[in-house]
Image 1: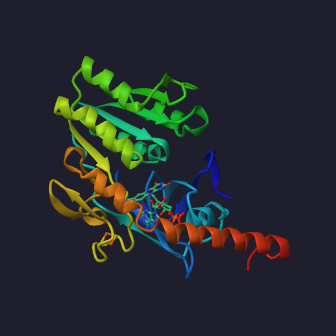
Image 2: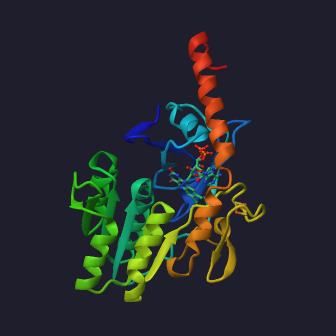
Length: 278
Ligand SMILES: Cc1cc2nc3c(=O)[nH]c(=O)nc-3n(C[C@H](O)[C@H](O)[C@H](O)COP(=O)(O)OP(=O)(O)OC[C@H]3O[C@@H](n4cnc5c(N)ncnc54)[C@H](O)[C@@H]3O)c2cc1C
Ligand code: FES
């Protein structure tokens, strides 16, 4: 089994030397587990030697299958690193904000910003303490780390956007990265807009090929059509049409529900018959 980090959140280290050699902050992989599997994009969360780390939430069939893989199992296709790397430069003071499983994307960005000479502030938020991930790791990388929970069970009671607003009021911040659910990125980037701080978000539309061919990851940024897989996934937050993104993310909701129900039924039947591989 994958290592469990929080409720429905798991990590795998994938041995993929060619990907690990070239991977940069902000980039992602597309995985296909087996011949009949769908292709799913996952952010490269960390790199260690010949291995890359993915951290994922089990939201449907493929992520559940991925969570069930054990050390030594293989994944049929691992394509990457895909997408443009984060725009890392020496800016001064940078904030990296992660929400929920989006926290997975923050260590590599924070690490590269630090290496480029920035003062790095991490802000991570989750619904409750038991859903927070990577706190110790980020404490090591960042110069300052703030924790928020919606229910107040750990850190500041409230949202990451509240802490960010407080920091923007009291000091100069030169760049902000926000990674999390689309609604969290929309709200949090709304906080930086009045301060005129350049802000990046990592968009997560439906992706299929990841190479700019299928058009499924189409997003609107600054009234222009972009393909998140090749033009992003990071974009200037203040130019993104988040409402369109959220609407397009729901395109296959019905098919995804049916697929998950069939998978659960299949698992159930296999359990009854004692055949766990069928
Ligand atoms: C660039 C990028 C990076 C991502 N990184 C991470 C990550 O690090 N950790 C993580 O937990 N999730 C990440 N995601 C989302 C992840 O790809 C989906 O959770 C996953 O594809 C769900 O597949 P499923 O079969 O388990 O669920 P399904 O039942 O198929 O779908 C559940 C939900 O997942 C999303 N989704 C489904 N298929 C896709 C697809 N092909 N492309 C994008 N989203 C899809 C949709 O919102 C859908 O409603 C990322 C998405 C993108 C675009
Ligand atoms: S995923 Fe097909 S064009 Fe981006």
